[in-house]
Length: 172
Image (cartoon, rainbow, N blue to C red; front, top):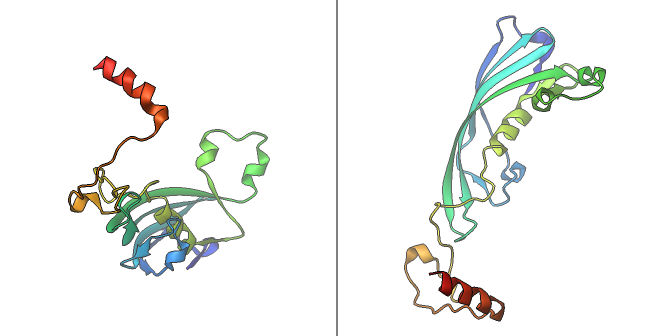
């Protein structure tokens, strides 16, 4: 959905809309949409700037980085953005710290679908985990540890750690 900046009402524009994106558009490779993305967005023009405030909601399925099981990841995120016409930043010789948060639009349009997808991708954790206490899988048999003990004996066989282990025993 493309928003024409020149046709925005003086009071602004409020939209409540669902978006369908392919899972391939997500930055997390194994993520899959469980629900369409619902967005509530208010767009206002203030002088040459375009202010956009909104909320993105959906449910996704992620794969845990440790145990490789799927889990549900709910998203309910708010955003507050300011857009300037492209070319305004070229008037400055140096960018300030404030300028790093500034976004730009080209021509007289902003693609709302791209904005929503970007805000959705920004909510993802750097390392998807089903829980913060997930122990992953057994290095010997591959069983998921949260589903119970497997009985495998895991020994430190790396001889490079022998001196470290001796040092740690002395510290106790």
